Picture 1: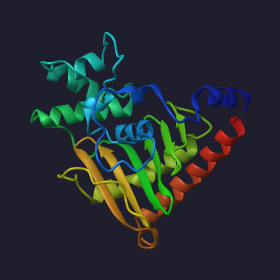
Picture 2: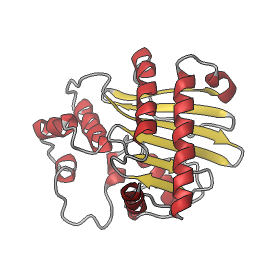
Picture 3: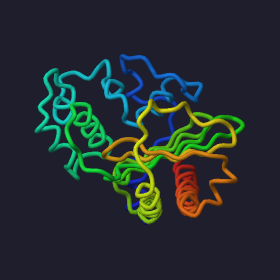
Length: 236
């Protein structure tokens, strides 16, 4: 437990601003938070705007970023990034997006992340869980918690969220339009980062909680969220 807590202290952050907020680009519409830096972090979760990942002070880029941002993309190298399980899940999603934009065939249904948004009276709560076991939680107030990479403290809960996502992904397909603004009050949205695009489902919380496929995911996400809040409060 000592080792887990020591790792947690390094990996979990309660913040209002992160360095990625210096991106030299316009933030998409539909941002649900008051702080523009948090809105940027929110949009980065979905991996549908590669340009948002490029910061003002990036300096000389190295792989995989130099590969993804190359003026003349090397699609063979990008395909290697997409299938590389050692890469961060969001980097892999960006690579799959790049391949699809170039009309390259990609494998379907490779799950890289689950994002759950809940519209509350005071804003939107957002919980993101990635296949590499990273976690992002943005409270409706704009407070944020981050877990980078694998952490034994949350492993069981993270795996439960990813497992509960599987039947939903199997049952639905990719959304072929622009991503929607954050859900309105009373609604819950479940977005899935998948190799062949963004999948999502949305509806009133009361109805979604009764759905046979969605309710296990909501339960698993709730357990993870409670634990993340508890542990980050301890560290604070």
